[in-house]
Image 1: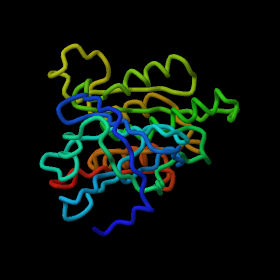
Image 2: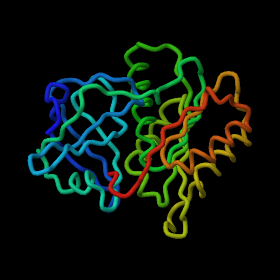
Image 3: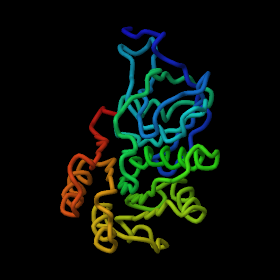
Length: 257
């Protein structure tokens, strides 16, 4: 099997928290603290002698850097080679992770205001960024916070996971975060009283309703490629230059998960 064990850490599955049949948070523990820049992704998967090749896929890290506990918001792909096996794992199972965590979908520190749009699991990088800033401010490592507008969409509210409660609570505690969850199938979620519509439609609404300091703002889109494509046009029409619009596409393809 073409894999160099020295380039990998072996994680232990601590728990899986299900939000629906195909959405869950996987919490894993590394043997030592893992350093990375919030917003980056790790390559994780399974290495088994019964497989003809390692099953490895990239997933954004939702947890904060510098800890042994790692968190991933994962969607199970129908007939996916890896995710079908991840859902079969028991607590204590071993999962491999490349030691080098990479990616350029990180906070643009040249800007102070940040508009962040995500579909379902695409909120992962923003969770890591927000958690990291919250801790840095509390520790006195940061004096002036970046300001975040996080737009988080799903078909139904429960697919937003525990992140809806976490970000809603954080919004009440701090003045640097505004969190806007939205559902696109409210007829299947009759108790939902929040925003309705796709993320890109809610993005357009909120950009139209406020005066965005264009010269101080960066934008981020993460998740479904169609949302990203539509949001790109909306952000450009709002006056943002292409170089401050960052994207991270999550492709969901047959046998890709």
